[in-house]
Amino acid sequence: MVCLMKPVMVFVVMVVGMEGTFAVTYNVDLMTAPSEHADTDGRVYIRIHGTKGSTTWYHLDRSDRNDFRRGESDIYKVVSSTDVGVPTCISIKTTSDDAFEPFWVKVYSSAYPEQKYFYNLKAKRLSTTASKGVREIKLCVVGEGSIYIASQTSSKDHADSKNVLPRLVIEGAKGKLELPYLHQRSFKKGAIDTFQYHEMQDVGELKAITVDPRGDDAWTFDYIIVTTATDSAVFRNRYLSPVCTASSKCKTSLKLPRSN
Image 1: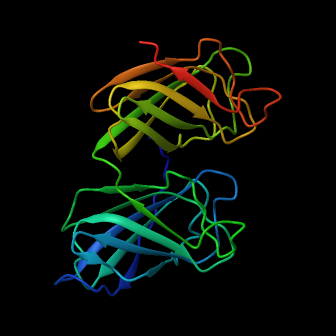
Image 2 (image 1 turned 90 degrees about the vertical axis):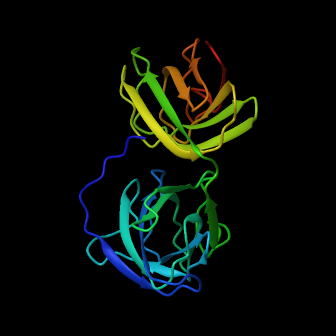
């Protein structure tokens, strides 16, 4: 996955856990979703669940910058007084009305250097107001393999888009997998863009994909390539159908069978 990040300072948060025998510093890298109104000025808390137990809740806050901005990543060093083991899940909650949509969270430490990724696959939003979201979500590792996506925007006129945020549903012989957004709002005419997702489930032999846009600016692509640890497939947009949320001018959902 292609992400542009500015250099940032690291803010240290002290927390007290309930399990384990010695202190561990967990590095938390949280990416706010790129969708409209995903950012927040509210209070966000996180809890790490590991193979040895769970930490208590702790407040994520950056004193050196305005954190939780749309499409940006914030890094925290969480010094836990106890060792909860290898991270397997995380919980995120808010105590604010202001809605917030996390995109993904990456957690690792010197004791457990393997980076664990937790994706908000359902694009859930956090808020204390039920009409805006839920108070708490739990995200877990869903698999062991990586998925690579490559897309080529068509070179025809008006194929590019400045606001589309497509999501993919991958269908395979072993089931379906809904990916997070292709983390890019703008797709330029004729350009090839690549994306990467870690620790995803294996859906087996690739059969089809469905492209679901989350923006009103139409995007027309020539093809999308999906590569997993066990398979690679090309999905061609043979009729060059544009996708967007405005049904009057494009497809609001586009399902493509395997081409190769």
